[in-house]
Image (cartoon, rainbow, N blue to C red; front, side, top):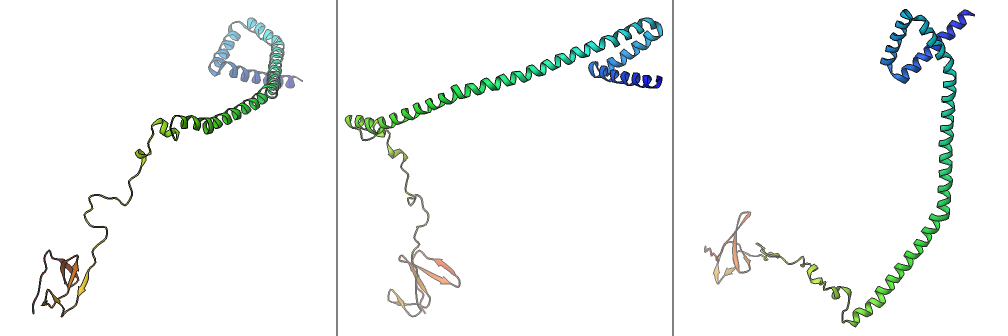
Length: 208
């Protein structure tokens, strides 16, 4: 029996030590342990009284703590229940009808604006001599006109290269025989030497 009581006491002391350490911290728990050891050596009767009182008042303190936590949980649950109930009631009674009414009013306003723009607005512009709203506001489309893509300035070479026509051996150029090939590029002759074409600014004649 004594072993059982001793085991229970040790277990309660261990749980108490862990609870105190969690509540006040490790350093303060160590300081409290040193203070209890000092009181046990110097004033054992006072320490016994304090321990007895703590053991007896721990039960109502624990009961009160549980009672407070229970009502806190109930209050939290009731709060959310009341909040969800009244929020849902407001959603069904106020928000949904209000959104339907606002949607209907927006459609009516849009239809009225469209009719006013296409019919009344056009009649008013025609009355003042304007063909469209852009003309009435002085907006011109010439500012946004784009230059055609085929227009170019500062070209070094023509877009269409000149055609070259070879002249065979034995034919004449300006009534004189020649022994090489001449090609014409818009009246400017060129002479072919091997694989290269050398341009000449003036006609050149070669006689055999």
